[in-house]
Image 1 (cartoon, rainbow, N blue to C red):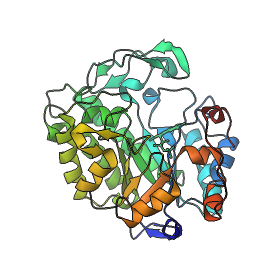
Image 2 (image 1 turned 180 degrees about the vertical axis):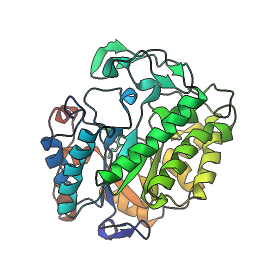
Image 3 (image 1 turned 90 degrees about the vertical axis):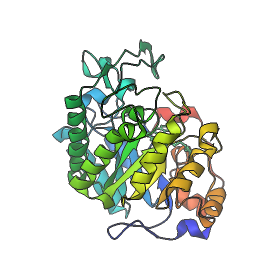
Image 4 (image 1 turned 60 degrees about the vertical axis):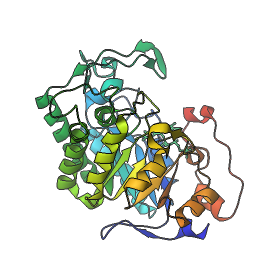
Length: 346
Ligand code: FNR
C-alpha cells in the first residue's frame, strides 16, 4: 500500500501529495443560485488530505443543467462561492480540480426556464430525470455549427472562471453520456457535417474543447474524463471503438494533466473494447491514467505497481468516510456506503 502514499508529479506545475484522488461526486446541494454552500465547503475541506479532489460536476452554463441544485461556474456569485471552497482546501494543504460539465440531451428545460436543450443530434433519451421522476426528457435540438463553437468558447470561459475561483486545474467531463460523450458515440451522434460521420469528425468537438481549454489555462492544468465503454445515458455501438482509437491517439500526442476513465464498476467489460474500459485506455494511452470503479486500496496499489494505471480515484467510500486516508493508512475498518448517505453532507 506504500505506493498510494507516495507523492506523484503530474507535470512541472503540479505534484500531488499522494496517489488517491477524490472522484467527482454530484451531490445536488448547491443553493438556488447554484452557488456552493458552507456545508459543501466543510465537506470538501474534510477530504483535503487526498492527493487531488476532483469537484462534483460543475455547470459551464445554465442550459447544461439536468439535475436539481447542481453548482455552476458561470456567474460572479458562483465564482466567489467556489473561491471560498478552494481557499479552505488549500489551507488544509490540498489540491482541487473543477469538473466542467454540460449535460447535453440529459439537460431539462425545467431547470433553466428554456424552450429546448442542445445536443449533437435530435435523439431523445427515453427516461425520466433522476430525483424528479415526473420530468421526462425532451427531444433535443441538434446544435448548429455556430452553437457548437459557442459551446466550445463557454467551456473555455468556465475553465478561466475556475482558475479565477482558485482551482488548480479542470477536468473536462467527457464521460457518462453527457454532452462531450454524446459526440463520441454513434447512438447520439448522427451528424453528417464536420462533427459527425467518421472517427475524426466525431472526435472533433472533444478535441476542440480540450485544445481551447488548454490554450486558455494550460495543458498542465487540463484533465479529461472519458467513457469509451457506453454504460450510462447512452447505448453502446461496436463502431464507437474506432472513434476512441482515433481520439486516444490524438490525446497521446498532447500533454494533458491526466486522463480519467468514467465508469462505476471497473470489472465491467465491453466486447467491442475487448476488456474493461480502463484496460482499453491503457493500451492506447501511455501517459498519466486515473483508474476508478469499486477498486479497493489494496487492489489499487497492486494495479499501480503493475502499471495498469497511475492514480486511483475513490468515490463512494469517500462519501461514507471523510477520514478515508487515515483509515486506510492505519488499516481501520471503513464504513460501507449506501445510497441513504446521499441526503446529507458529512
Ligand atoms: C458519481 N460519479 C460521477 N462521475 C462524474 O464524472 N461526475 C459526477 O458528478 C459524478 N457524480 C456521482 C455521484 C454519485 C452519488 C456517485 C455514486 C457517482 C461517478 C464517480 O465519479 C465514480 O466513477 C463511481 O462512483 C465509481 O467509483 P467508486 O464509487 O466505486 O469508488
